[in-house]
Image (cartoon, rainbow, N blue to C red):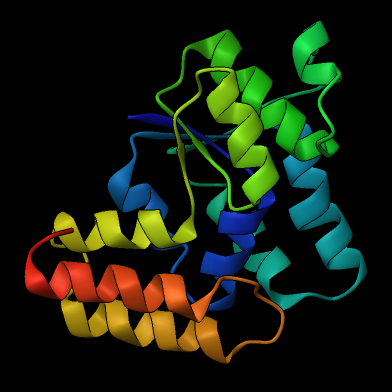
Length: 171
C-alpha cells in the first residue's frame, strides 16, 4: 500500500517511539517537501528530538522523499490548508496513492471532498493492532503515552473509543 504522510502522524509517532510502525504497515511512504521542511528542517532548527528520528527513518527504502516543487491543482491550491497538507493531497491525487495520512480535521474533510482516503495517527495504530504488529496492551500503552503529552493534540476520548472497540472485537 502506498501512502502519503503529512507532518502530524510522523511527529506523533516519532514522539512516542513508534515511527517504525509505518514501515511495517505500508510498502511505500511518500513524504512531500513541505512535510519534510516542517518535520525535519524546522524540527532540527528548534532542537525537537523527533526531527532526528524522522530524518533517520527517511533513509529506509520504504520512505520516498519527493523533490519539490509540487504543482497544485486549482482546487487544492484554493483550499484553506497549509503547504504540507496541500502537497499531501496533491501527491495522493497525482500518484494515485492509496491513502493520505492526516491528523488535522479540516485537512481530512478537504481530502475526503476530493475523494482522497484518509487515516490519522489513531487509525494507523489501530491498523497496526489489526495486523498483529501491536498487542492490545502495546496499543493501550502508546495511547497513554500520546494522551500524557501536552504537545500532541489527539483526543483521549477518541483513543478510548477505538481501544474499547478493538477490545470488544468491533474495530
